[in-house]
Structures are given as structure tokens and as C-alpha cells.
Image (cartoon, rainbow, N blue to C red; front, top):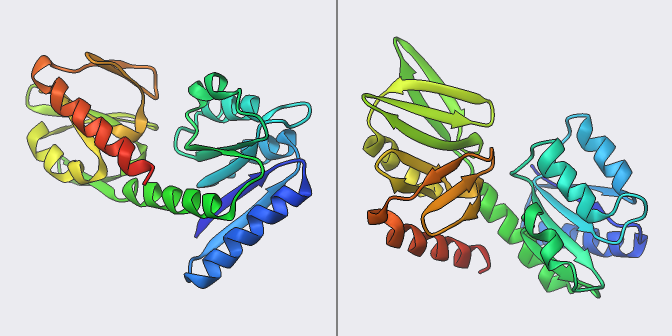
Length: 240
């Protein structure tokens, strides 16, 4: 089930987005669940109770708590780096303010049905890429970790440290073998000691990346060209 939230204080906009999605889902045999909110406070209270969505259509010009503040709370207070956020606005002057929230897209009003469908398809595509399970062994026990929760792997001599949204762990292994499993999920081999999850990188620089937990990791000189090329490729795929 793909869970979608729509948050806009204009009921007409909410109804438009909901109708477009439901019609598209019916035509393509997709299972979606939609919940509508008419204020940022209502949405945030719902998320605070542990609820979650795969995709959020969020109006910027909300009363009391605006969409930008809601987005910041989702990323910072709730530490949710995975939810895909599509901002909606009748103005186009918010781009710099949206940077730290890392929205998937920006929809200008009046909204076009084709753009809603495009964003739905992209969010579902990204969710699929974040799917999967990484399996590793310690002693005689087997552990399973959701790929979407993994931030990066670090080589520590004969062991590999796995850093996720839930904490850290270590197991015996080689980083090369880990990368063979994780490359298809858009993990980047940025350094002989680090493999990072592209979807958890919040900032790219030529010589380093910043992860969603604020840890800064180096990109080795020999891997900078390849890393940059993959970054561009993944960004291009994201807007197709």
C-alpha cells in the first residue's frame, strides 16, 4: 500500500489532487491510501503519533504553521528523511527556503493533472529503489536491515560498520562484497572506506558528502569523477 497525504487549506485543491490520484490508481490497478489535512498543525499532530506517509503534497501558504515549517519539523524534529515532499504554491519565490527540506518537487498553482501523476510515479519509483533488505551475519546469528534505513557502510580493518537510522553495528566482511549487493539500490562507493546511500546524502561537495545524520564523509580523489557522474545520473533519473 502506497500512503499519500494531501495538506492544503483549500478544499478544492485537496479534492483535485485526490481525484487525479484515485483515477490514475484505478486505471493502473495501483493500491493507494490517501489522507487529507486542512492545516499544518493537524498534519504534524498526526505524524507525531507515529503515523507516516510515502508521499506528501504540502501547501506552502498554510495558516499558523506554514508548509516550510512543517517540512522542517518532519526532517528535523521527527528525523524523517525518507518521506517524499511535493510543495504546492501560487508563488515561485520560495526556492531558497525549501533547500534544507529537500523537497522532491515544486508544483505551481494552478496545478496540472499531468504534473500530479508525474510526481506520483516518481515517488513510487524512488520507494521501489529504497526497498529491499540487507542481510549480514554475526557469529551464528543472521540480521536483516531495511535498505531505506541504511545511511552508510564503513570499512574497519576486517570488519564493516553499518550505520542506520536505528544506530550502528559491525560484522566481519569486505566492503567490496557489500557494494556488490548495494549498488543496485543507488549506493555510492565514495572512498575505499565508505559506501553511502545516495538517498541519505543531504549535501554533495566535490571532496565530501554530508549525510542525513550530519556526519561528513570524504570522497577520495580517485573516486570524485565517478561519484559526480553517478550523482548527475541519479538526479536525471529522478526527474524523468
